[in-house]
Image (tube, rainbow, N blue to C red; front, side, top):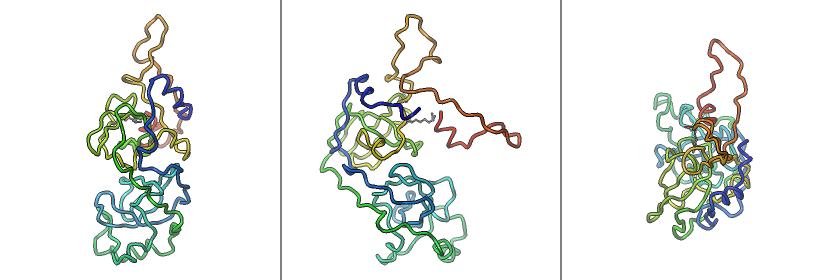
Length: 265
Ligand code: MLY
């Protein structure tokens, strides 16, 4: 149901305009995704950006990769675009005379790092050099204006991209407001953030786009004379997605993994 959202219709409904593509640090023609799940690469540790670590592609959507640092736990996965300067082919670090570092929170004793590194790289499928695309240049200045519409990563649920509005502009920063979510997911970021995209990006790169939330000012009130209760109010942009029944296992009745549940709520 999420792909039934139409920007064209939504812009009309909200009488708003999209931020021009030239505002964004994204390529005009999106890159191709030539990575495969399981491939290894080098990535800057998001929690310790001066260190370069080995990462594995755990999943992908559109031209975004879900990465996990080797030797780290499964609760710190992060997302990068295929044309992010935070990722590079294996061997880049050594070529630059640097050393690969264990991730922050390395799950073993620090002394076992050299052996862990050898083992993790032995027989690994390395992402080919051609899969890494050049990061686009940043626009020379912050061209965003309040009210402009865009597609933005929900930083609290970074696998989601949602329709958003520029709420404010201050120097090099913009305030990203998620339509229909009453401010709960809004954030400030630099105008050249890689987490914000021009309208149509998701569709072009085959990434799903969440419909706007059904609370707050984007809610379209039904025109029927009898006023329905708050609970039953439905936005045309949030179609009901019934949860399929789950098999009952070991007394855990239909419990879903947390991330999946969160995405559906
Ligand atoms: N249901 C979850 C996730 C909401 C996602 C909001 N994004 C799309 C702005 C929650 O309410 O936390």
